Image (cartoon, rainbow, N blue to C red; front, side):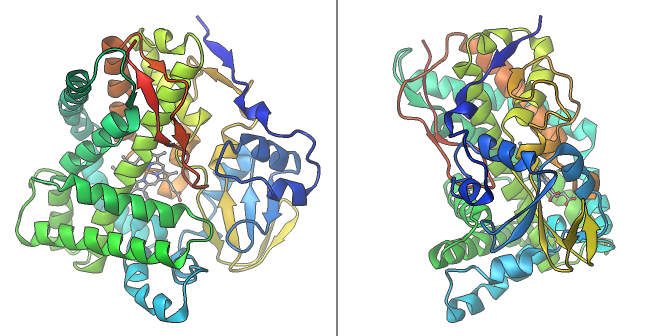
Amino acid sequence: MQIAILVNAIHSLSKDMTNFEKLDSIPIGISPYEKYKNWRSQGPIYWTDELFGGAWVLTTFHAVQSALKDPRLSACRTGGWVMRAPGARSNVRAQLIDMQRLFARAMLFVDKPTHPRLRQAMQVGFRPDTIQKMSAFVDSTVNELIDNVEAACDDNSPFDFIETFAQHLPARVIARFLGFRHVDQRRFLTWSSVLAQFIGSVYPSEEEALAARTGLLGMADYIQNCLNNGDFEEEKLFGVLVRAQSRGEIESGPEMLSQCAMLLFAGYETTRHLLGTAVYWLLREPGLWAALDDPARLRSAVRELLRWDSPVQYTGRRASRSFTLYGRDIRRGDLVLPLIGSANRDPGRYDEPDLINLDRSIGIPLSFGSGPHVCIGAGLTLMEAECALGVLVRRWPRLQLCEAGSEWLNIPLYRGLKTLMVRRS
Ligand code: HEM
């Protein structure tokens, strides 16, 4: 049976926008899809002054996918972005140097030859059998979180799904996957949220930059202590990285710490948004929650929900040389933003892109990127989300949205909910 539901939310914004000036006046963070549609109508590439002091935005599926594989576009992009936090005074910028040093070493932000060296070393920890072995832990954690909610509130009491479930599951899963024996979840959540605010903000303020610095250095320090004290499970990802380090495949110090902090952050921030938005849309559109009762549908449903509302809306690249792209002159050093959220709604790629179709067959969604930097954690995420949604639907078949109290994040990079108020019946 085809489950296709027309979602009207995207039509709520004004339709009469015809010029770029008007387009740029809509905040991108909340319900961005109407804006993307207008950008796509201008073609696959579009210049905007709205983002990062000026950037090329790529809007179609083909343009985004090709850019992520284009060797003329470099993943090294943190220098300007971290150091030129626009709100920061010059004495504060000096304090950001140590944060920039860590950011710049992360695999996500480096090119050949460093990138394949790091990726190869890390990939060992992401083998399908390793992911499969995590599934029992994921299943028991999902059930434990559900038990906790049931113990704390009656069937009819509203509760925040993000606070009680969506933020805890990925935090516990990534901590276990990396091999932490103990993790101070409260501090970890604080570090992650200040980092997300900084990374996801188009014009971070001085306060946001300094908070992110504290968050990243705090995270790195915590990890360094665990590694120094051997306080991790050797067969898990930290063990893989430590062995790679001893073979000289990863440098000790900032390079090693940067990879560990990136994994901790990347594994948490995105997956919690996926869980929140997936539950939101499944409950908001009649029939979708019940349709997931069929476990055979979980696989395609999770991929479709990732396409529908991608937790990561765009990524960035810098032109490493001048060249022409779709008739536009890209200059060396220009910032290029492949807009994943827009590519996912491209009618040139998907039939009826503004419908949620839980049976749509799309393979690995572009929401995980493409090319050399394609998300290394995709397999873990898919397993975790399929397991979580399957158990949630089985245990709470009458789950419903509360009319009030839910709130979307307003960070352009990340699409997710700050709060999601639901009740069990
Ligand atoms: C809903 C969940 C997730 C989404 C939407 C997501 C999205 C992405 C995207 C779009 C990229 C490519 C960025 C680019 O090309 O610039 C990426 C890369 C990456 N992701 Fe994820 N991710 C998710 C979960 C995870 C998890 C669970 C982990 C870790 C366990 C992880 C670790 C990474 C790493 C290390 C990279 C860099 C890969 C490289 O540079 O080679 N991600 N992710």
